[in-house]
Image 1 (tube, rainbow, N blue to C red):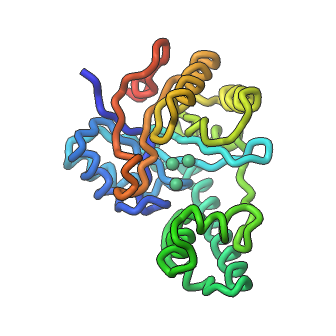
Image 2 (cartoon, helix red, strand yellow; image 1 turned 135 degrees about the vertical axis):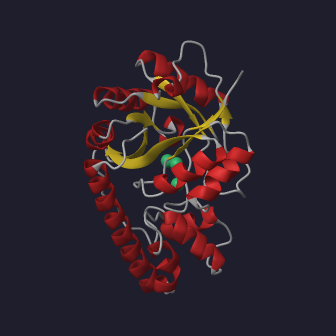
Image 3 (cartoon, helix red, strand yellow; image 1 turned 120 degrees about the vertical axis):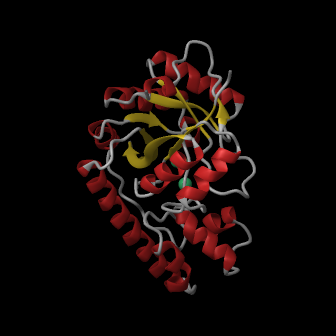
Amino acid sequence: MLELIDLHTHSRWSDGVLAPAELVERAARRSVQLLALTDHDTVGGCAEAQRAAHTHGVRFIAGTELTAGWRGREVHVVGLRVRLPSAELERHCAQMMALRHERIVAMAQRLTRAGLPGEALAAGALAIPAPTRTHLARALCEQGFAKERQQAFDRWLGRGRPGYVEARWPELTEVVAHITAAGGLAVLAHPHRYALSGGELRALVDAFKQAGGAGIEVSVSGMSPKAADRAASLARRFALAGSIGSDFHEPDLPWRPLGRFAKLPEGITPIAACLD
Ligand code: MN
Ligand code: MN
Ligand code: MN
């Protein structure tokens, strides 16, 4: 029987909108049997999610999604089954959360200089443990400075726009090392989202594998069949397990429903089998 699993989700500890317990409850209602919480650069929501998962009879995996730099690009690494507490990983997350807050403050100052109420726009983001630009985008929409989120990025928050502040992310190898040091499995998130050529993507996956990477997402919401094929061949070529997730952030984005069926392409080891 196929299992409904989800190894990539967000709560309001980062840019998701549900509390960890609400996320777990929603996953349970959708019959998700195996669930990981993977907030950006924090593991803070995992304790609450773990308790809720116990209540609802969902198997829970503590996780995170760490942001890294590779050849000047931003890439994401999901860490699954990290041991908590984990001093080194949590120290890293604390630094990243501080960096994220500093970036939001700097972006708010730039928005103010551009004539917008920067402080008011950033207030919500600064109440979040691990804020992202998405929080500013939501505020820009709510306060009438953009019609929809993409427009908020195109006008204000994207690279080269008035509110943009460059972020300096830690190197890929460092980020993978933090996950493995915490006993976790490092999974390269959404490989189709990096706008890399075939050769560059292979170089990224090669570097990731050499750093100690264990898996790659081969089925994630928003991945086209062609991109899924490409991810599957990368998994085979570099002997990485395949991971599955929704990258769920909020209930009203219907193309990212919680949970995916654990049917993986031929010849791919499911990362779930490595989590026991
Ligand atoms: Mn996100
Ligand atoms: Mn991501
Ligand atoms: Mn994500």
